[in-house]
Length: 107
Image (tube, rainbow, N blue to C red; front, side, top):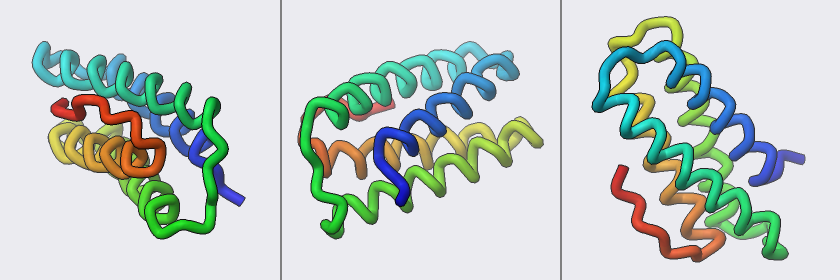
C-alpha cells in the first residue's frame, strides 16, 4: 500500500533532481520553497496517525503521483518545469488537507 510518507519522499527526491538541472533563478527559488514545504508536511505525516481510508488521503496520493509524473517530464524537457512546479504545489495542498498543518502553500 502506498503511504503519504513514501510518496512525499519520492516527490522530494524528484524535486531535488529537477533542482540540480534548472538554471532559472525563479524556478530554483520556487523548487527550494516547495522542498521546504514538503519537509514540513513529511514531518507532520510522521507525527500524526493518518487514516488511509479517507477521500482526502486518496486525493493526496493521486496528486503526489501526478506531481511525480510532471517532474519526471520536466527532467526530460525543461520547458515543462512550470507545469511540474504547479502540480507539486497542488499535491502539497492536497497533503495539507490531510495533515491540516495549515502552512502557507504559495509556492
